Image (cartoon, rainbow, N blue to C red; front, side):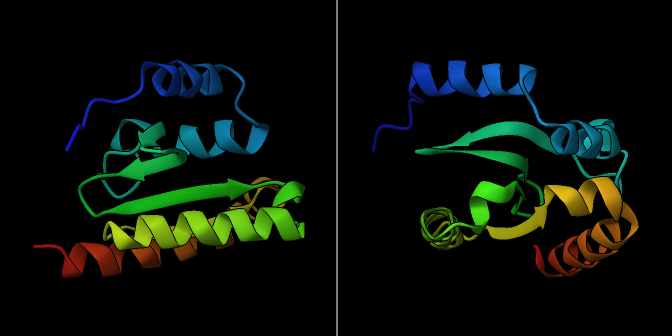
Length: 124
C-alpha cells in the first residue's frame, strides 16, 4: 500500500490553515499546544483522501466544525460518507456547528471533554 501523501492535498491543507473560519481559529486557540486535557491536536490534518479540521492521533479523535452548507442534503450525504470512512479506520468523529463554537463554547467543550475522556479510557 502506498502511504505517500498527495503533495497537492498537503498544500491545500496548509492553505486551509491560512483561510480558517472564525470558529476554527477560536477552537484552535483552545486546542493547540496541548491546552485541552493535555492532548496533542493537529489542525487541518490529511487523512487521505480527506482533510479533517482537527485530529488527535493519541485517542483517535476527529473534530469537524460545520457551517451552514453542512445542513444541506449534499453536505449531509458527504459528511455521512466521510464519517463512515473515518470510522472504518477506527476514528471517532465529533461534529459541532460553527455558531455553537462561537456562541456556546462551554457546551461544546463539555461534550468534547466527555468524548476525550471516553476515548482516553478505552485506548490501550
